[in-house]
Amino acid sequence: MQKKILIFGGTGAIGFSIAKSLKEQGYIPIIISRNEEDLIDKSKKIDCCYEICDVMEISQIEEISKKYSNDLMGLAYCVGSINLKPLKISKDVDFIDSFKINTIGAINAIKANLSSL
Image 1 (cartoon, rainbow, N blue to C red):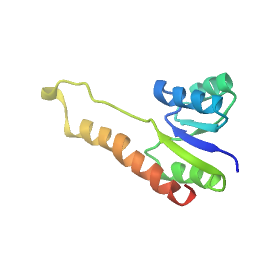
Image 2 (cartoon, one colour):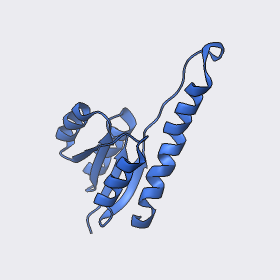
Image 3 (cartoon, rainbow, N blue to C red):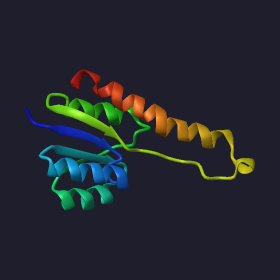
Image 4 (cartoon, rainbow, N blue to C red):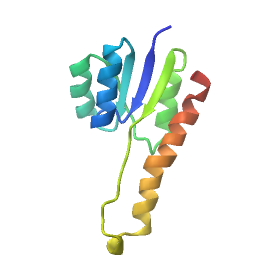
């Protein structure tokens, strides 16, 4: 069995560090992000595959998950957002958007891959 691991947020500092470490250990990281330019650059650095995905689009998560469902070993969710605005100028939507990315995105990524793990 191939040891493929999906890494959502694979171009960020934490996600890419995980991908590099996994590659060194003989795993096959699949880095996932919205930014194709970053994906191309980072995937070349460690010789791995990549997928373009906006975690706010569940259909994209499901498509990628289906593609790797037969030989998936793990998943890392390294997507994240933090709202650093002063509270007095923050709006409800700022917190809702952060919750969607940080929590709902992770839930959807895990749900889409439960049967494969």
